[in-house]
Image 1 (cartoon, rainbow, N blue to C red):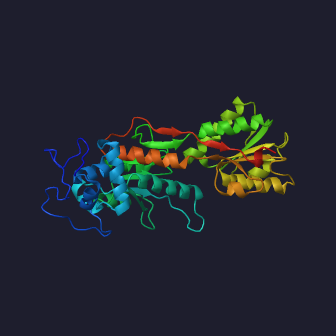
Image 2 (image 1 turned 180 degrees about the vertical axis):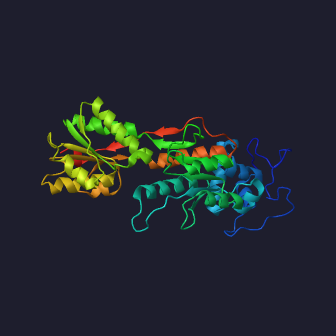
Length: 366
C-alpha cells in the first residue's frame, strides 16, 4: 500500500508510484552504493517526488512522512546523484572560498578555524567548499574568480579579510554573481557581509579591567593597522571604551616593533601600566615576554587580555583571557545569506554584526 503526504505526488494527477517507475519508463541505473531513489520510494511507501521533496523541499512534506523517508534514506545509504541534479537545475552545490595567502609552515590558526566552521555550515546545507587562490606569482584575484565563473564550477563565493575598497568585492559585484563576505563591504557595495563587533568586544575588555580595579592601562597592537579594518576598529574601540570606564590609556607607538612598545608600556614616565589589552593573542604573547623580561608576573603584577581565543590561550601560563569569535555562527550566517541569494533572493540591505565573548582566565584575574 502506498502512503503519500498531501501535496507530495508524482504529477498533477496526484498519483503515487510505489514501484518507483514514476512514469519514467523503467528503473534508473543503480548508484555506487546500491540504492536509488526508486529503492527509497518503494521502501518508504511513497512516490519518487516525495523522496525528492524530502531532499530538496522538506517544508512541503508532512512531518511523519519526512521522518519515515529520512530513516529509509539513512538505512539504505542513499546519496542523490548530484551530477544529474546539476544538469537539471544548473546548481553545482559548491561554494568557492578565496583563501587568504598564508605560510604553510606558520598558518593563521584563526582562519583555519573559520574554514572548519565554513565547511561544516556548507555541508549542513548540502554544499561543498572549493578553495582557490590566484596563480603563484600573481596578486590580482580577479583572473582566478573569472576562471571559476567561466567554468561554471560554483554557485557563489565567500570572501574573508575584506579591506576598504576591496578589489574582490568590486569585481564580484560587477559580475552579478552571489557572494558573502567576512568583513564589512563599502557603503556603495552590496551589504552581503557578516562581521564581528570589534568595538563592543573591546568595551567588554575595558569594563572587565575597570571592574578588577585597574586604572592605568595600555593597548598593544601593530602600528600599521589603518589598512586592516578589524584591527583599526579594535584600537579605536578600546580607546573610546577606556574613557567611558574611567581608565587612563597609555598607547605606545609600535613603529619600532611590538616588543619595544610592550617594554615601553612597563616603564612609562608617569608609571607603568597595570594591564595590557592586546589586539590579538599573538600580540598578547609579546606582552607576556615583556612582563617576564621586566621581572614581573603576568596576572599578579600585570593583567593581559588577548583577542581571538586561539587554543594556545588555554595552555599558556597563566592561561590568557581573550575575546572568542563566534566562528560557527559567523560561518552559518555567511552560508545562509549566500544561499538565499543563490536561490533567487537579492543581497540584504544591511550586513550582520555579531557579538564576541570575553573569556576570562587567570591572566587578568589574579
